[in-house]
Length: 210
Image 1 (cartoon, rainbow, N blue to C red):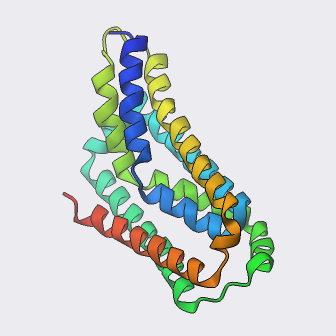
Image 2 (image 1 turned 180 degrees about the horizontal axis):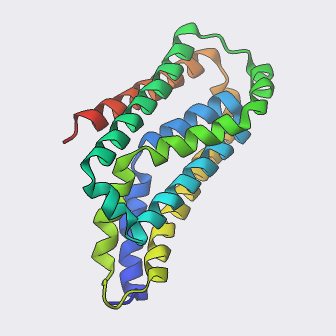
């Protein structure tokens, strides 16, 4: 079958529900928006979007199937992704433990590390095999290998990346609106503790899942 407006609408409903579910990408973006300001959150979102597009392209063009069926590659990707999430989680927990926030000065100093924000977003997504599995489990439900073109497959894949970025930017806008409240020391420590624990939990869950 080709992609019709009816099937695309059904696909959008599924994607929106998936995007709204909090995951590692959300936690990484929130962590960097708190420590690096709006710019840090935006650059992290950009990194996540690029990685999402890369994984979506791989899945749409069939490369994702090869990766998913190659056990050594998949397991390696799984462990690297889990380790990276745990690393980011411990960074946030360390910040919560120290509770040393220098406010606006810290944000200005960290603006020079924009590439690091982008890289963290990119790596949090690209090393998460669950993203690739998501593409490989959802896309085939709306594609026919005989009649569907590669452009249709790419359209569906990029829809996930775009909607994911829109949702993260919406959260970033909310964080910006309440930044004065978020910059309170007790609030920052609590949020760093929550995001750090969530990231470590996501990493652990990734390892423990079969």
